[in-house]
Image 1 (cartoon, each protein chain N blue to C red):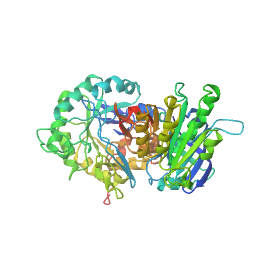
Image 2 (spheres, rainbow over the protein chains, first blue to last red):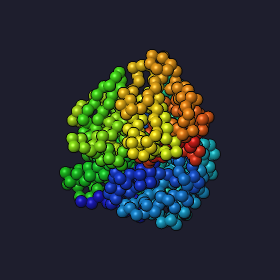
Image 3 (cartoon, one colour):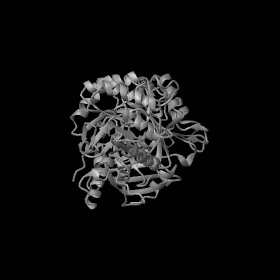
Image 4 (cartoon, each protein chain N blue to C red):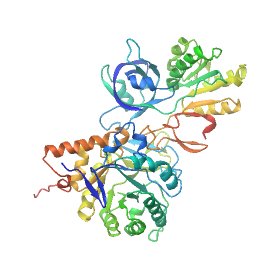
Length: 311
Length: 270
């Protein structure tokens, strides 16, 4: 039974990845999870300079979901390479570093430095809803990069030029047509696209009439967003040739299988890690069980195998 | 730190909305320190979705008839704790723990611990009181522990007996004056510090609602005595990964679940 998949030049032993921002730098989970069994681990997003993050409260639970407004808190790339990367390199699974910048140049610089530090794949976070600043030739107003096809193209292209490592472009669902943004990333040389990041959302305490998040708005994740994310992955998989990584409320093997059948080559497990640290491992086991039961020899047979009402 | 399904060995209402649940968790009981907490998954479905943090209230080590237990004191305040209150003997609870950094004790130079609890804040302080007792009998024989408990009204005072059973002096403050001092527990603290001879050799250990802890911090600065306070913040993972439970300190944001929940008041920007 074959479960390995390729994202550009990077081979993953199975298609289940721990999503950025939900798995720290992996070491936090080492007592609870067999890290080496995961297909890959995505680090928390790294920025060029240390980033303080947003004021608390940063987390609030909503029906079948949660809002977060962490704001990319991290100690910067220099500290990451010195303090976090050595541990990740020792693992027998792929590490994919998530990066974000305030400008196209930031992304290119981060990519170069991580390339030189021996990282084999990068996920470009073009979609964190909790940071406002963005400077690019194509966007003058305050927007997310992946809310604009031109800006997405520009950033991916700049990173492509500065590194040979596999590039994943992580996209926001807060757009009219996500497949157009995915195509722009593909045209610029991305090896794959991952979607979706969180939905911009909010929650209010009616007693105090204050927002429940310090940042007022935040990103919605968890089972609540799964059906929308699934639809977006299905639409995007039809529109691009590069692998699509499905993300959004995946809690169990069946959720992951839905995304794979819809066209995802791999999936990222996010919010589920908080509730069940072993979620990723259980999902891998569940996918293998499903393959055994349905006599599927290679996971590739499943990717995009959705049957329409006509066939 | 472990993620385990542990057997519920008791789950009793102690008064009004307050419950105490006993869990057979030898490995966690062995490791746990006062001030640490667990994250419990209260439902297998998605409502509530996230685990909930609970202070470790008491620990019973492994003995002849006891396998190693931990106790959690909780108040039914929402959907999650409502589900918890309905769990029965013999059922299992999925928990991660022990988590976080607990209280720093005993402090040989300040052998007069002042335990200050507001409402549910007694939860981690009972465990601390029991451990201080163990240290006292061995090391710091002269030390005296004073416990101050605050609540809105008489029937919301928790654990008075537990502290008294340890031989500690316990003083009560209620907002409505139905028991003990009429007023805030922090006023009682202030009053005590003004009258005691041992001010300079005291350490405050406090847990309770945020406004109370802010007041405790203020008092600790005014009287120039160390204070350790246990904070509560919304958290998703409890193990330091999500950065959801950030609290502002002099050295930037720190995680309540990892650098805390117990912080020295000198470190915090409250």
